[in-house]
Length: 156
Ligand code: ZN
Image (cartoon, rainbow, N blue to C red; front, top):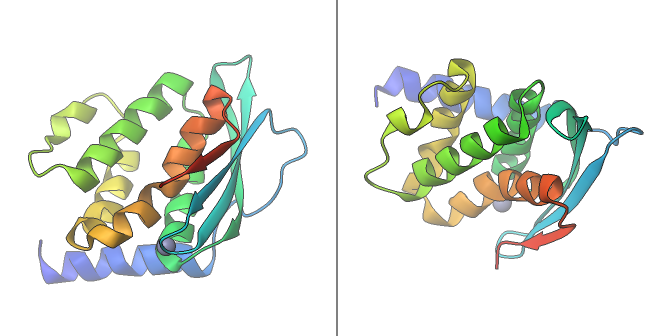
């Protein structure tokens, strides 16, 4: 990756870490889940509002965690609005593979929102720091649990 691109990515992530978007508890949320990453001490609650059980009309979070976990949750809530459950699952799986697999092929996400893919690629820079991968993916694991009706998840 070019150094200036890497700097830009870090700037975006730090900005979300410092000023998280959608950091609130929506009154009309239809599902929520608690996520816990004991290795780092990150604890998040993800709130999802589904319209007719299919489209995500609102996503928000609360909790405490390191800059990476908070930035990832913040960026995720922005990405999820307007997506269907199926799209959210595809993005979650793509992001997970991006962070953990050496042979990840971005064409796996063909047809997905390009802006969302770009943000996920930024965050997947944590791949170089394996201990941070759980921080970055915690919000996504928790979101997936929320829409599937599981209230508690732990990365352990
Ligand atoms: Zn963390």
